[in-house]
Length: 329
Image (cartoon, rainbow, N blue to C red; front, side, top):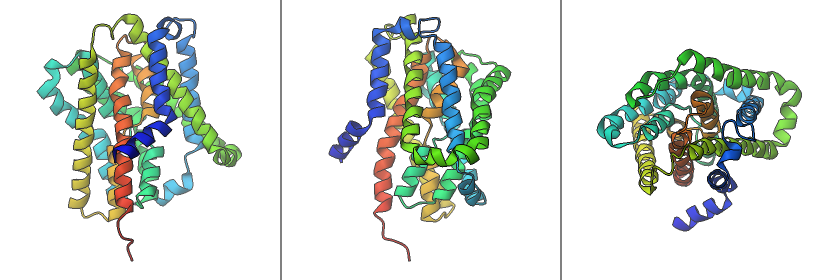
């Protein structure tokens, strides 16, 4: 088991890229910080627009329609993504909030508010022989709902961490830089959809490169402000432990809920994978738009970065276990 996980980590250039981006921010924070020579504000806005244009271009409308009618699955997945996760954060914040730095607490709130991820949810549902059409619909719907619900959830709950957020400004920013390129990408599908599908491996690489740039810029602001020098390894351990706890809890609850509702095994798989995952590809751009040049931005996105890697490792093992079940007649 551990050997397989090590091999996965070795093959995951994106994980190595994130570590490299953080390392570069530690070494050269002034270049990528807001107001620095990289002009991070302009570069990140262009990158965010490009990432979501590619998401819109790759969103398969026919497959979305195929999964649209399975309403019980959709209600469960969206409830976990935008209700159960925030409720879990509230409980954990009540229990441990006084002992957690404000920026870390805000980071866990942001983790619990972002939408589900599309690519890995659908891919792992397919590997596990689950309801792929339903997973495509739910993951895509979650991304669209997140443009409005993520800032709403953060805005409503952030006061408990001592932070505040302008909802109208946040939703306007997300609409312009996330929703607009998604719509433009969908409109461009008749012209560019076939080209995108043919070179999906390369376009996915471009997508991830933009995310690494955003991670670098986010950590540059935090390093420049000295926030990491004020927190030692204990905070990193705290964030990792919190991510493990949240993932284990949500995987358990989503599995129990699907079985209590007597879902088919295929629908259970889609519910577990879509309902427990959180998107790094959308989450980092959202964080840049919602929190701007917040000096603690590096700490705010760190829970999501840890959770992203944990969910890939754990859910890939779960997918293999689901796939090993006997075929149904």
